[in-house]
Length: 393
Image 1 (cartoon, rainbow, N blue to C red):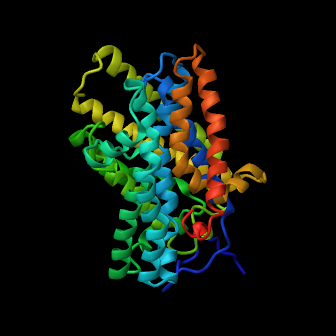
Image 2 (image 1 turned 45 degrees about the vertical axis):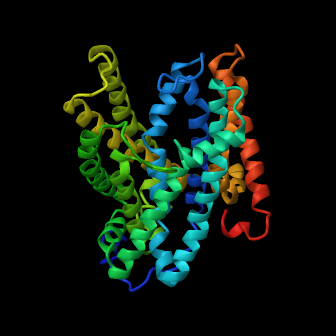
């Protein structure tokens, strides 16, 4: 009897997603991205972009240009993967209660504790006599009340609320995306092109209209204006990929993506190199203007989404195809979310204490990054031992 490959077999719709075995590669990706977040914040003061320290190194500009272009979008994609299965196996009330505990409560607590503590380190540079009590009160009553990296948490909660409403209207709404994922088991380029086209459509016009520096802010609720729809696209495309049979689609460990991570890594080089060409044009030819020309915003935006999608596929493919045990990432998996929530004040205070030392930027960044990972991991693990904390962190 002639065999039929998975990519050629007809796809049958299901009324509800099947329960699949845990995809540990995605846990590894999440832990890896958490380390990338800590690294990103650890090196920013020593770059051209956020040169708040007297020391800098061009290598960190290379790092930050890359990380800023993909890591939050990747987090939204990963978060979206498990939304539809959760909605299919839980009542709406239970799902929303879990999301409130997992996202709403941590955001509120972090907004009034972790974030003021982090930014107090910056405020002390301008006013060494400022007390934390005075700074905290001004932050929460007068402002500004920056959110730091926890903006991701409330935006994710908002997308989750939208997903809940859409699921209530039509549980099969994302079936076309799921079918595409299954059809792309051995043709991940098709899914990549789909992701690229959708994100280009929603991001490039928004980048032109709002400019990259515009943020919507209301107290601790903030989000980069040009990226709202970009992140939503990653979230809901991830939700479509994970809606049913996650391990039989483009993210299968037996699929083509898991066997071609090197090709995807090579595919990131061209758009990334061209992004730096555009940065050079902006700084050296255009004179680094406050308002960038429309053509510049459009071209850079296209390169941005291309690199973002390509490096996401490269990272997913690498971990899906890896046979290594990744012991550190495995151990970090349970604490990764807590590390994300608590690392920021640790990073900023380490940078504050190093500010006056005449050390090379690489040394400073290393001193910040390594202890920040260790300390934030320790804090997260300790918090998770509190009664009931495992349901939140």
